[in-house]
Structure formats: structure tokens, C-alpha cells
Image: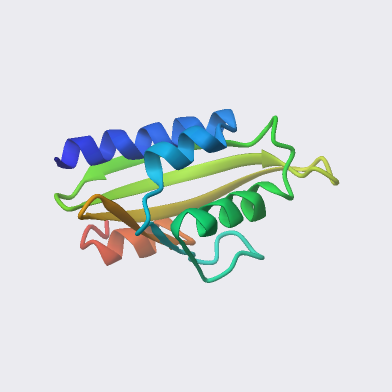
Length: 135
């Protein structure tokens, strides 16, 4: 099951990168979906839950960026059994400023009863430490 979880997360990132909201919602967001933000992206609520929360998070996170240039790159992904560690970089261009940015962040995604419980981290070291893999 854990390799399936890695692939499920990858599919979610691919849908995100294409701007395919409905596909992302259908594949990644279940009634018990939860995302706890970690401070990498200012202006987000502390927690998003369920389909409505996922749509709110999608809009809040994509809002300040030129969606043509918004792209998540998976730098490292590890199967941890019940959880997946994902270290990523979001590359984007400000919709008003035109400034290019690269923001490194991490997710630890725990899968329970088909639901995803995601804890975000503003830096890779904190996520690695949280899962006992601090380098």
C-alpha cells in the first residue's frame, strides 16, 4: 500500500501542476482530508479540512501567482510505511510583481482509512527531523 501512497501523492502534484482542480480533488481529497500548514506560504489558514477546505487552500495558495508559471518539483520522496515524506520546491512568478521565486517546503503525508492527513513544514530539515531522518 505504501508505494501506492507515493504514486497517489505524485498524481496529485501532477494534477496541481496542470491546474486540474477537479482531477486533484477527485484523486487526492477525501472527506477526511486534512492539511496543517507550516508557514512556508504566508496568508494561509493554519488548517484546511475536507473538500471545501481543499478548494479554499487551492485558491489561497494559487492566488498571488501567475498560474502559467506555477510548478511544484518533487526533490525527494520517501515511502515511510504508513506515511510519505515529500521534499519539494514550488517555482512561481508573482502575478503582480512578475518576480520569480523558489520556495522549498515539505509534507509528511499520513494515510489512514483512505484519508490523507498532511503536515507541512517550512523547511526540509524540520520535516526530516519530524520523521527521524535528520541528516
